[in-house]
Image (cartoon, rainbow, N blue to C red):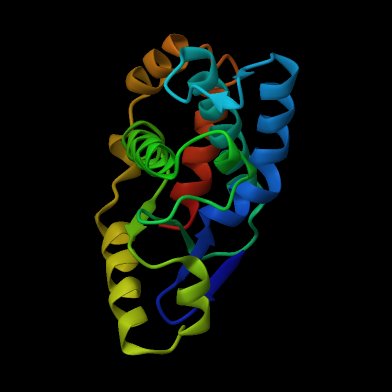
Length: 187
């Protein structure tokens, strides 16, 4: 679920694994609980479904980052060509799911104090070839994100607006301060 590169002081986290292990089970449970699957279709563009995705993915990403131990800069790796392996593909067309996840990740990256690397390689390919030249490019991109990322410019206004618009009550200033502090410690 993560790779550590001590020479670069970077820890790469696999978005897909975090989603699959932590967010998806709770997401599917809520989708089922609220009967959001109609005629074997899930309207991923519906506001209720979108809110559930935002809630579970943001919450689990932040909680996972808060549990990470180590002094490395944390970068979340997301493959923008293949959506996370998900049981929801039975109810949502592949291309719609790819578009939805790509939009969601880009939005999270703009709003939250998280460092996210968008790449065309899956985390398993990165892990398998972790010492190859192609992965060197990924590491360079991750290092650039970590070095350019200025957490002190993070303001809570966008995050508060986003949280209010999507009914994400747990996203309080206090919660963001924990995430921000975690990211600041290892600058």
